[in-house]
Amino acid sequence: MPKLLSQREFVILNAMLFATVALAIDAMLPALPAIAAELSPGAPNLAQLVVTSFVFGMGVGTLISGPISDAFGRKPVLIACATLYSVSALLCFVAPSLETLLIARVLMGMGAAGPRAVGTAMIRDLFKGRDMARIISFVMMVFTLVPAVAPLMGKGVMLVAGWRDIFLVCMAFSLAVNTWLAIRQPETLPPAARRPLHVDLLWAAARELSVHRVALVATACQTLTTACLFALLSSIQGIFEQYFDRADSFPLWFTFIAVCAMSGSFVNSRVVVTLGMRRVLVATYVAQVGLTVLMLAGLASGVLGVLAFPAFLIWAVGIFAMMGLTMGNLNALAMEDLGHIAGFASSLITAISTVASVLLAVPVGQAFNGTPLPLLVGVLVFSSLSLALIRQVRKRPA
Image (cartoon, rainbow, N blue to C red; front, top):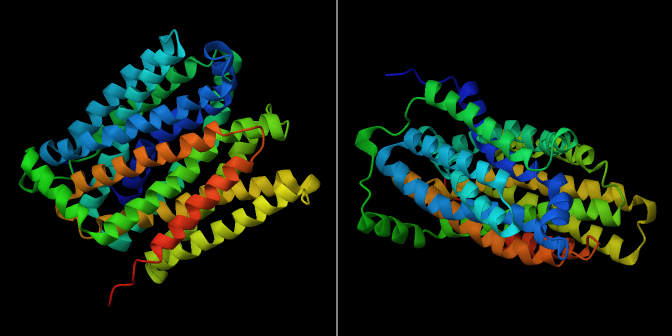
């Protein structure tokens, strides 16, 4: 039987698995104007669907990959998902129309569901509670490096080839990471702990999740928090191009935002064990609501003037940092009492939160009018609801 990986290698491997998701999203951001010009010149906002269609497919795919991994183990499912991801990336490369591209992106997202849901279940196989939150924070901290460089990579590929070649880079990255997984990572779910793939067992697990109040609140907060991020990703390139007239420097500024946002995961990994997940979550949402109110008031009134761009950068860093400060905690909070159905619980929670977050983020993105105001209003609503919900979770007695 293969030896367990060191914690450092385990964290880096999981971060790279998660990074296949980030690469497929963030590397496409500089390409959205080119995609719009080639495939939807009459409706440029439709190019944003290249991002959200992928996320939608990922949400649907997690509902499938998690239960299958509970029955057959984590590694085979991760490798099968990587195969679907790679084949779909090739379909994206040759897509002749926007409709074909969006269908291929949904399939590519379904392949990305492996790292998203099964990767989380693999972590839960080995860790739980605050320790799980700490490991996920480390994973998110390393994982943040990929979104930091992905737009620069996408821009670089476009300079030497074209926007379609970005999909080939995504495919090569996924194949490399999953080869590493196949060679080095032992199976984390022993046969004795597996659950047969029967509909009645899956339904029983769903019913158990549906009456678990803390898990439901954590899932709702994940939905709203992720909607903030996807709304930002849908609109940010257009905001840089049309509102701030900085289209050419967008990849560099996005790298700056992502690098600064690494602080969120780092801070969470340091304080969550001491302060607890709920306290960190409440403080994060309070800060996000306050920052968004200030930004919205400043832009709407025009008082920011030349400070509008640096203020927007700080606000965008806050959105990414919020992900690092919340997602690991929300996952751990939701999964704390669900270790016996980790694969299915992880897939159901991720599926619900991802698909619902897309449904919330798409209208915000399509409302883009050349200014950040629709995005700010959407984020204010989502983060305020998250704060109201997480305050309903009471601290457990020692």
